[in-house]
Length: 165
Image (tube, rainbow, N blue to C red; front, side):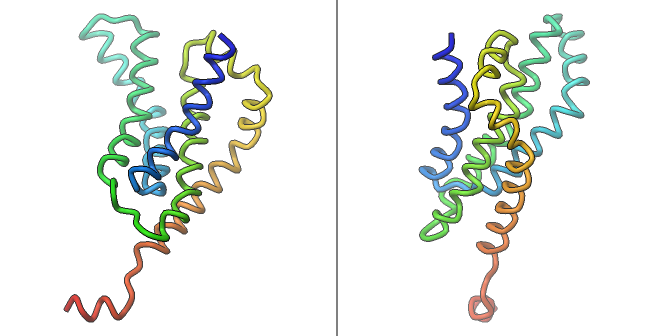
């Protein structure tokens, strides 16, 4: 169980940056999409869980867990799909920082939503304790570098604007 929990934690951290860099998707938009997912989990998940348990008759605990995981990850998946091949050339290097922040934030947000035995096993690792202590740095750093990336890569020069007219 320990190796499985470690593999899950590493996968949550490493898969998003690898996908973002391989697909050349925008890491800044992915990070912001994950933040949107967190807001959806906080404010929309209770209503969706109530609706699904009343209409479908599923277990509240199981439904709540899957609704939260879905609301958290769907905006990230849409960001990956819609921004594929939008980061080119030297922008890929700058994209690595928001991409890594996306992976770290995904782990910080998903692990508390996992089944309690798996969650408890992951939280016993020193690496998790370190990551949990860096939560604020991951949020502020990811937000800062995401905004910086968006500002640096989406500005068109005056020369380009003249040719568009």
